[in-house]
Image 1 (tube, helix red, strand yellow):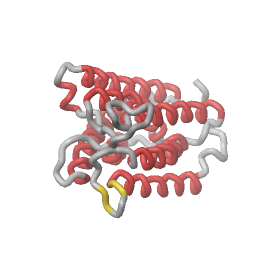
Image 2 (cartoon, one colour):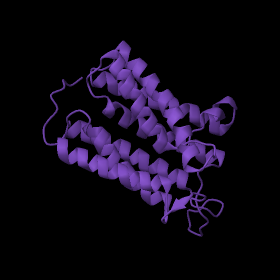
Image 3 (tube, one colour):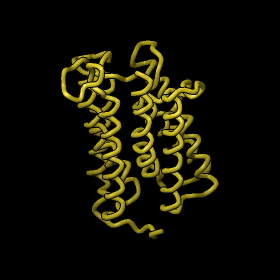
Image 4 (tube, helix red, strand yellow):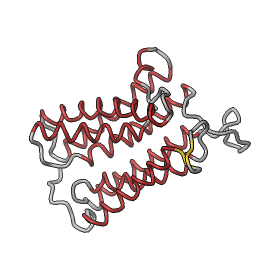
Length: 229
């Protein structure tokens, strides 16, 4: 998953990883500006979220593979979320920032999965389908396409529905979890428990959580009162 160590080596994959981080930060800042959240404190929150996400990605992969190395996106999401909550509490920020991270995460992963593809990690099982690459499912590209589509859907929802704050964050979870769940069936080498990978179990829990939040808070039932840029 976008290994940070790979950025230390000048390879095609490392260049794509660097681009992915840059795209994520750029989208975050642009969306923060749109939401009137582009303040000095929000930059600190963004960097804290990035660091927390990297730590969570490492720990998540370590736990999921019983000591293996690499990065877990789901672990990164959890780590980044907790880090952001702590940073906001320290700064006294009360406005939700989930929507900012939702669009930034999808944009960054859509690009970063191409780095995984070029680096040869996160590959799929063997197959004989016409679009197979080297005889395997290009699961990295499946995920890239899924994230790109979700990113577009989030922008459409923001433009035409203007949901209440955190609405895009919940919507992103409802869309990403099932997409990742399905794609996991085509990935190779995942440790499985009860027929499902660790990521799939996490997606099930995440999907229930995000559906619950959407149903409870109904962010799409009312138009956001935020001023248009």
